[in-house]
Image (cartoon, rainbow, N blue to C red; front, side, top):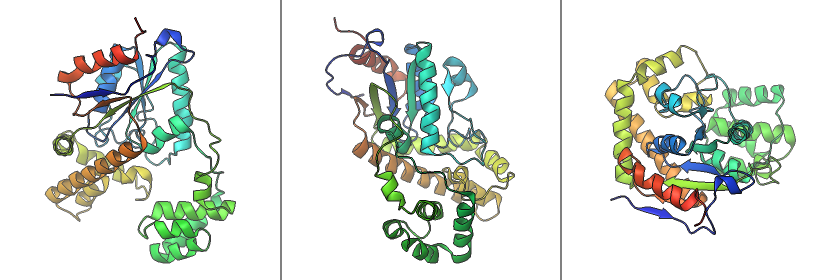
Length: 332
């Protein structure tokens, strides 16, 4: 039996009686059904679904990121899905700027903005804003990457410690991307990246109000859904999708190459792993990712509306009825 919890609110938020229409935030771990819930809500409330998943922005990874398909996109307007080429580097600041624009566009035509995703940094930026880091000159970026390639992770981390001791202490030697980022920020600005991140939020949050809907399935149910979905991804051409990605000859450190499943399936295509082993490893990586997402949600996001089971069509009526009653209708 599904259990739905609605946090007490001072009053409902009727679309017609506030300066800014509410923004629905649908959050949950991977494979929890949040995309399906956002789609159903988009149909029920004349909404526009806006992506807050850092991997679903890449057009080359529709299958492995479980991006909405063409039929879903035809049912409800979808924004920020598949908008970037695989080689592009995307940041929370750039996402926030694009999401702000899409929210304003939705509001301007009286559609309800529905932000859906599991990338915690994006959701945090949406509701709390960001402290911007100045652009890093190209020569310093090149210097940082060349130094890491020459020294390796452990020795590079020692060099970073001279500029940013805190980052050097907590970042593992194998985390090339964040080590290099910390180095280039400290080298270019003279300040550790942590100081920038703790500074004044000068990129403001998007004006709310926000209604936060969180899906929190039982762990065993979620893990079963993850495994079933990955099997479906394999049947839908995930291996071919990774093969096409490898043909682009991208650096293994670009974000798209770190999407769950890419590294594992790439090992098969490179002759370094058998398919069964790779699928097993990818499922494990997906479970670990979901665990990190659930931890973030538990500590960082208080849901106004919490569903403690996997979302599916059989719950649609009850969930939408509760949302409509508690959140989107004026008091009697």
